[in-house]
Structures are given as C-alpha cells and as structure tokens.
Length: 195
Image (cartoon, rainbow, N blue to C red):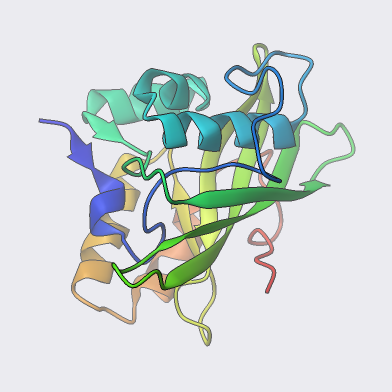
C-alpha cells in the first residue's frame, strides 16, 4: 500500500491543487532540460493539482524517485480543486547554477466555511541531465523554530520526522536538520523560508 506522507504532515500542505496567477502557462505539464527551476516547481505543483502522480514522480531527482519508490512512498499531497499556489523567487546556490531554492505559497480551504490557510514552501532543486528536479522542501511549521526540511532522497529521515511531528515532539527541528538536508549541491545553510 502506498504511504501518503503528506496526509500525516497536514501541517505542511493541506491539500493539492493550483493555479499560478490565475491559470496554467503553456507547457506546464512537463519540464524539459531547458526549463528553469521555477518552471519545474510550477509543473510539479500543477501535476499535483491534477492528481497526476506519475508526473509528480518524474519531477523528482533520480535518487529521490528511486528511494521513495523502494519504500512505496509518495511525496505529493492529495489533490484539491480549491487550492491555489504561486511560484516565487529562485535562489541559485552555487556559481555553476546547478542547485537552487524556489519559493512558493500554497493556499487552500481548511473548512466548509471557506476559511483558508497559506503555507510558504521552499523547494530544493538540483540540475540533472534531464533538467531541474526536486530533491526536497522546507517549510516553517512553528514560528519560533527553524524550518522543517524534508529530504526526498532520504525517506527514512522523512518518516522519522513525520513520527516526531505526529507525536508533537519539539526535538524534530534540532534532531533532524543537519542530516536531513537534501543536496542541491549542499548549501551551507538551510533554505530560506520567507514570511
């Protein structure tokens, strides 16, 4: 049975679904070697909105795809036609521009009365031979703690963090950040989470 990591990490992403600036841009369902990291994030989130698990998997780094497939784990949240997203700034983390952080926002309804919640997510990407691919993400769970970093290339670490969050363990931030950072050509610091 496929594990849906995101269902247990509802604090991170409430649902899937999206449009950026009111609609889909041409060619957003795929990401080619010429596309920038922001287009890859857009394609990933748009595929999530559409419930296209194959496309979301194809936009992961080869290592993330291999490791999550071995554990029958999906790193895409469940679809939601009410969610919206924006893709923001790209920050290249090396002079070679082969690693990047891409900021995004994710907004969805949280109840039947139309109340919404917006989460800020920074995606960690690495340039592979096939183009930009997603290695992980970071998001601010608690305002007074460092962002939570999920390394899609290390599913065991993600499951450990999931369990700590489920238990409400305050140690999730201090225990997991150093070993759990996805490599986007290993940045010296955690991805920035804007507010």
